[in-house]
Length: 357
Image (cartoon, rainbow, N blue to C red; front, side, top):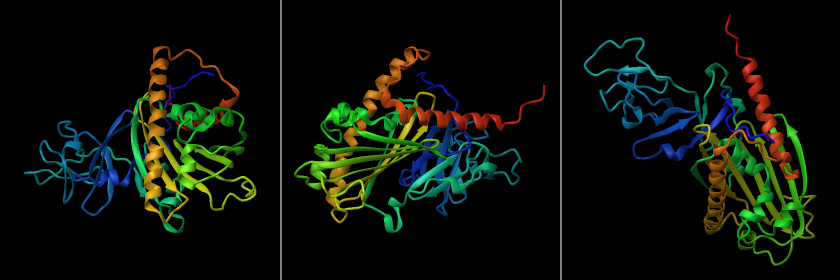
């Protein structure tokens, strides 16, 4: 299995750029590099979020060093001000504004605590293709916490990590993992979808891992499942849970027990660095705020464990990026995920008009 960590980025797609509250800081400004492009996100005085190139058109100063003022984002160097569309709306000491006085802007959508960005052709930015995650809002809203982790890893390597959970028993054996053999021998159903790949793993009649025992108070063995769906280009939707053996988990998982809904968003900063966004929603003891806090404190260290192993993995791959990696049986879902991404990349490239010779 070859490792295509240097594959081009899929641009005509919605990528998570931030959580809403990352922009709701004291300055209302967030600088972030996405696909090698420096971008500044800001919330204007009306509450709208804008995303523009982090480079003033006047003298190239980074706009992320500026301030949000009444009319938009003000450059710290000479005070040029830009609105959310990237248009210059004010030049101090000058009545006329040159038509070329603007900066590149990007379509953004704020929804369900996410900030989504479209890096490709703005005319193709279809908001209906944004993932729906009801566990952050409405009737299905669950108590949740979220985080952002900058990682020194190609974004698709994190997708690989989520598509192959046999590592849980080794990397996370003291928390969410449990016995390694339980994971290796899990019964797994995998299917391609229109937007990626989905799998469900069943671990019947097994000992619950320590995190599950702390959360739900299991006294004996459980029937445990892990449902993961990769949605192009960089999202993974997760439902993990367990019920006491004999409660009919396979027939009806929607019972009181242990339920955890996680969202994973991975967005490329460069070819070998990314942002890992995740949210953990507590689907058990939902009326107990301490349960949500305890779960976050359990989950956070496990993701640090993932990041630690993948950071050094990326270091080794960088030393010899053309050296192929050997595939094993457990790679089935991640191979399908990579194929789905490659198909989308091929379709995007084929849609670009070729320059006349």
